[in-house]
Length: 222
Image (cartoon, rainbow, N blue to C red; front, top):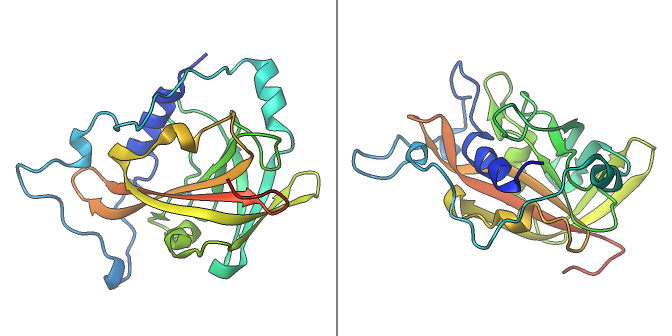
């Protein structure tokens, strides 16, 4: 059994770093700022985010995970943003961090949580905002998504689950309410996570998280 808190800390602090051989080129209008001046706090100095609420220990027993998984997702489509990308299932790194596909062109579904289309809880998909090979990835557009935009997830059994965007947040990584992001007990939702904001050249991380919440179209928004 692992604590969800350990996962969330690692996800926030390490989940959206660019590749080791250098940050991807970005359009001038979105180019990362220089590192914070000496004496100011930087992301690299923060060892844990400030949670806005208690994060409980989650059951990761095989029985519980089997109930959560249902059918894994294989593709994510957001027509209004021109996003059409494969999805692969991911778990945990040795240090407790959530695995994220190396390429920003692929999203990772956190397989220790609910799958899209589940009866309850958040199905979490995360991807790098950019990488050194392709530059900005599809998830770099998430901040521009409109409320009510349609998201479609193709599942491994050939079914499709449609969602509509209910909320978009861009929040300092130290202040994200990760208890909401990885909630297993609430209404069924799709949650897309990437990085954004200022890039800290000293640490190789972006300072913010961009989180998109979407609800199944056949259910009322929460």
